[in-house]
Length: 196
Image (cartoon, rainbow, N blue to C red):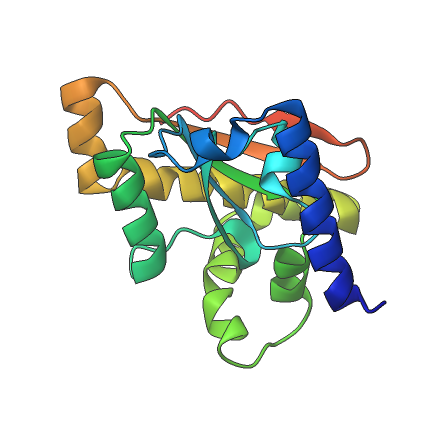
């Protein structure tokens, strides 16, 4: 059986198991979603948002892209954020990066052709801005790890400075913005304790 066919076999097994443990699971799932979280993460296949957080279907709205970037000129990301905070009224927005991020590493190690090079340019700008801090770290792995963290915090800053988010925080006190990093070596999430 090919990997492609295996996905459908896995899906049928999953659906059967869900119905066996909760006969109303799909009836509940088909109702309107009311997630409390918007999760913005990296598209890396090793970092599945629901699995690393223990979330169930309906718990989180998820948006993923290379290196978990939030660019105000990215219509896709801005649409997801707008939908999440205005229609779903999520109370928390999480930007979650991960150590060993290929996007961060690629941005730092080599020139990239468009569109990836264009997309990752803001990481190069961020690295330049924090050059002294990064150069003070005596090993390359440590620098990459710190740049992953700095990138997450920069994306959190971008979100809290969006006029829509500022207005909602002023009026309602939420959404709260959080910066996390997933550590692939331990399987644990690290809260960067983002403070706007």
